[in-house]
Length: 181
Image (cartoon, rainbow, N blue to C red; front, side, top):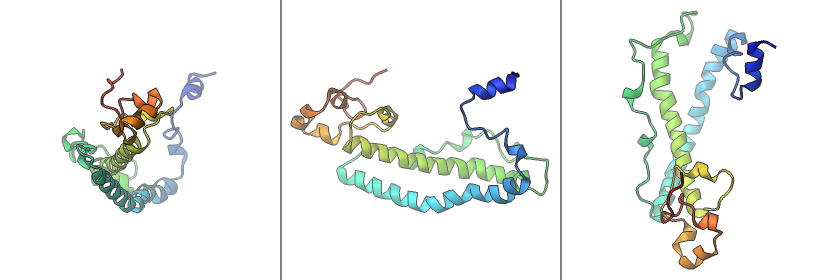
C-alpha cells in the first residue's frame, strides 16, 4: 500500500481538493460559482428576521450583556491580503476567479460577514436554549460559549432543588458554580 492510500484511510475530513481538478470547468465555474451565493442570498433575509425575533425575545426576558453581531466579524486588519498582494488563479484569464476583486469581495466581505451572521444566530439560540432548557446531554458543552447567569429553572429556589445535580450545578447556566477545566 502506498503512502497516499494510507493517508486517505486515516483522513476524516471532507475530500474536496483532490476531486476538484477532475470536475468539468462548466460545473466548477459556470454552475459552481453562482451556487456559492444563492444559499446566502436566499437565507440571509430569514436569518436576519430570526436574529431580530430572538433578540426581542431575550430583551423581553431581561437579557443584558449579549454579544453583538460585530463581535463575530473578524477585523479588517486581520485579513492577510490586500488588493495589491491578493493571489489569483492565473490558469484561465476568462474565469471570474482570475480577478483580484472577486477574491477581495469573497475573502473580506462575503465569507466573514455571512459566517458571522450564522454564528451570531447560533449564539443567540444557545442563549435561549440555556435559559429554557438547561438540561445536560452529550453535546451540551458546545453551548458553553453562550453562558448565562441563571436559567429559568434556577430562578426559583424550590424548583432548583428538583433539578438533577448535573443540571443544577452546571456553570453554563448557573454562575454560582465554578467553571470547570
